[in-house]
Image (tube, rainbow, N blue to C red; front, side):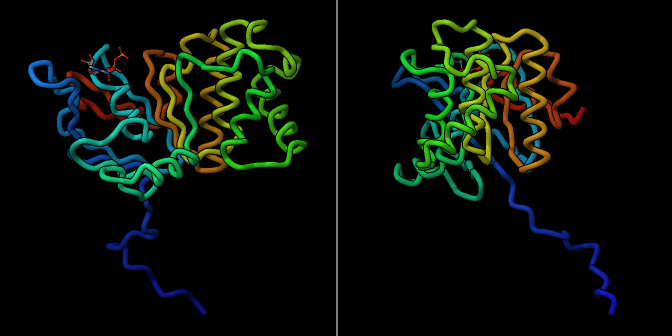
Length: 242
Ligand SMILES: Nc1ncnc2c1ncn2[C@@H]1O[C@H](COP(=O)(O)OP(=O)(O)OP(=O)(O)O)[C@@H](O)[C@H]1O
């Protein structure tokens, strides 16, 4: 028996956006020093996509990223992350939402007294994965994929800046996050390592539906982006799919 014809006016699947931002405003400072950093930002991000946020210094990119990533309190407007409204959310809920996220920032914040592999295992422990043998294997696997298979037992102090950054990338991705927030993730990397990291994020989007929001000034990455959103003076001024 044939399936009934679908009404083309209706969407095939009601897709929940990974992120939906609407009417988002944000201010820093108090009293006279109070300054508006974001003005009425709207942005809807599809699951599994890789979106790049661009724009001049001070245009509000990091502010948007930290609001979406539950790292800053939403003051005005709506930010829905994986279907959850963040404006007015309880801290206990924000903690749970953060567990489904991966963060890659310029300052990689590795623990100096832990090896590369142990630092990556930390990325699993916050997710409550307890079995140590599984953690060790998963950490070795992802470090290997990032070209650090022969550096598993090195302390961060004995790694180059680019190698440390790749350990931080491995730590962010090892827990299989639903959304990855990356602020200038390739700044400390040579061209090949930078492309490896972004290709890996793109592949995770395809295979597992991982969504990536990335702030970058790195033009090499743009060809890999599904979407490029440009900000200026706290507003989105351009939105393109290359
Ligand atoms: N903690 C803070 N306190 C006060 N003002 C801030 C704070 N963080 C950001 N701002 C201001 O908010 C505006 C947006 O900053 P934001 O860091 O989001 O910009 P950006 O586009 O990420 O810049 P960059 O590319 O230099 O990182 C700027 O005017 C900045 O000075």
